Length: 71
Figure 1 (cartoon, helix red, strand yellow):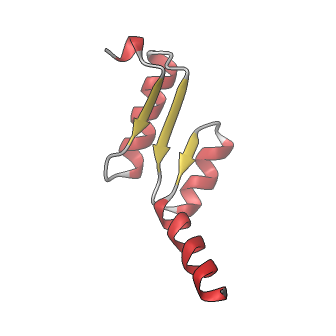
Figure 2: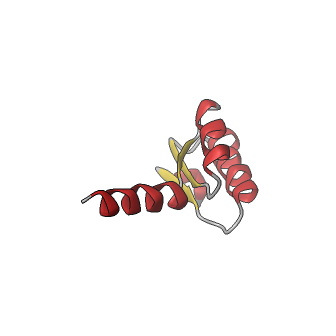
């Protein structure tokens, strides 16, 4: 179960659900590494300041598109 996990990745369709799941994994189950997907880049910045490891498909895609258009 989650008690034995080395990493937990929250990948639901909702930012709030991902953050809640990540917090539970981190603080209740003491999973050493917790990562969550956040679609909203503004929320991503906030959650990073709160100590959550996040990634944003929105930000990743925007960066890829920018690089493609600049080449």
